[in-house]
Length: 486
Image (tube, rainbow, N blue to C red):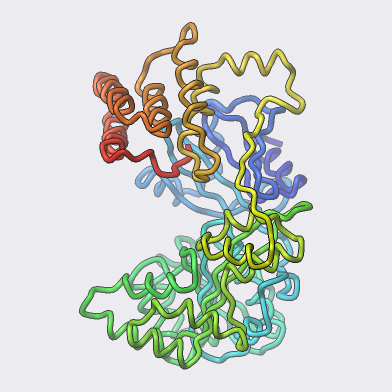
């Protein structure tokens, strides 16, 4: 068994949600939402990473990767199982992320809290549009598969799926199921969706409303008497409505508002939270297209949708904060976890106060040098410029702003530059500048970035110089870098 297949087998054994293979890093497996570097494996060199990942790409994806420097496909290792794969380039080389696809399609009844009878009832409709939304890795594909399975078990219809790539494989039960993969069985989402109208479908699963053309055809398909289940990458149910409408030119938005109001059945937004014990649990926000919601969409009053959700509990609507609060009250997740996942943190804090729930806003630094690592190894890594730069960068730019520490980041970045043999290159200076900015020394950050830009230009690194110019623009406005963990 080759190294990659061995790592994928380990990912399944650990019940990990993702395997990360990155140049100049050890393999990393996400388990229960936490990233775990596999210390039993050596650091993967850029050449090893590229060769390992390029070898498993289908021919079409090799061509796409060479043109776009990123590609998606499904992979089945020799040891069994299927994985959704994304291969990409970053500043260190070629990287890949592998997400296991469960062998068994989950039953709707197994999805857990947040999926009310109102959502279950959506699977009984003959026509209309149901949108599942949430950030990458929030479980949308699992929810969609469970809804499809419920339809498959309870109806006698024709289901057509259009996915990129195909994840869960559905066996025909009560329904006939045809699954099509973009780039393998069809050229595009839009083309497959247009063709599906001539394939006698009752239900269409659309992996993603990726562009304007696909979105428009999906709306028209739902209007012409089909049930369409689709996904989007938005954070809340209400922002999903705005995202769909804003895709279209201004002179067409009134028409699209009317079309969306006429076809929409519901929007279900979701995210995954770490449980107190182990594993993860889903938190949801549900917008049901009642007559009042449809009127708000048609009249361009989407700002009133959050209020509609609050007053629509009797028909199955609820907000993220309502769901998060209930998970905390049920002792499933920690208040801090709920706070970090909330999109309206102030409102959630107010709910906590009303319920006398204590929220402690403190973040403990993760000790990367404990566990099975020896003191000698820890000492060696603490004297490694690369390790120190990585820790400084994380402390300066972590997406979770509560986990940032500018002073500590500056200390580590300067230590990395001061070690014997350390190079004062563009990357090291970039990290120091980010740390200085996080510590609110913007003048120092700008001077350091200037030096970094000179180093980058001297070595012909145009992309790095361009990135540094973006950093400079932030520091000129007295702002630290946004959350861009590398």
